[in-house]
Length: 298
Ligand code: GDP
Image (cartoon, rainbow, N blue to C red):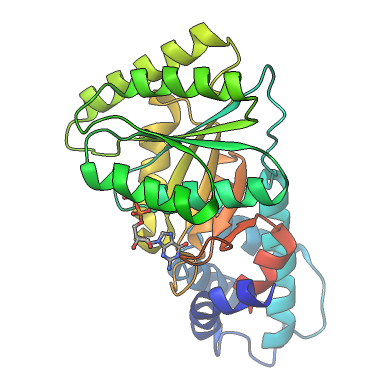
């Protein structure tokens, strides 16, 4: 929790800065509410969530409201937005392996998230196999292998430029043969050639579906919080075309744009499974709406 609060410090500072001086020694009038709404938008919470919070604050009754009180109410209202989308990842998919496809644009933190997710699952005694389905970049294959070594999980990989669906097929076969619980699949994230990317993803999904109609059980979109609004655009792009089932937002440590998590929750209502608060193996946290809401509101 401390690491979480520390990670969100810049976001909380920004929220605080934006709220400073808004609440005066008076009842909440329209101008003050306008200022609050604007401050929330400026803090990356997005227009939908900011409006909703404004209305919730307006509906409350108080004699006087100081800044501390405002932050407390803000934390409560943010929590109400986050709680419905906070869903722990459920890896009970059957027959084994439970297959998790991880997608996202290059640089979003996809490979790191796979390593962290693998570590998190292994800590719960699940067997994990990583599949290097981003065959487009040799560096991506290498990086996944480094993560596999780090967390003690086997990695199935082919050659650069190889067939991603083939790797995934082999991954399911190996996991099945060895009784491994979870197969986590890395995928290519180049957006320059989106049609090709989507075709490749469809092929991977088809191959998986032939092996087990339930697979992939999860299609997780990894988002870089530091990109702010751009992260929201990516949800828009990927949710339908790639069949996204849930989100993981990374790099929430050290960015002032953590409010985008609230914007994503309100705008899309998609499950948010976990958040990344650092580059280490232990830095993927299950999404705890209360802790996050308090960390953002400061
Ligand atoms: P990919 O291209 O999507 O696979 O992205 P990578 O996993 O290679 O991550 C890109 C960069 O972001 C790397 O330098 C990672 O160490 C860093 N990164 C990933 N997740 C986090 C996070 O939660 N916090 C921080 N601070 N850095 C992260």
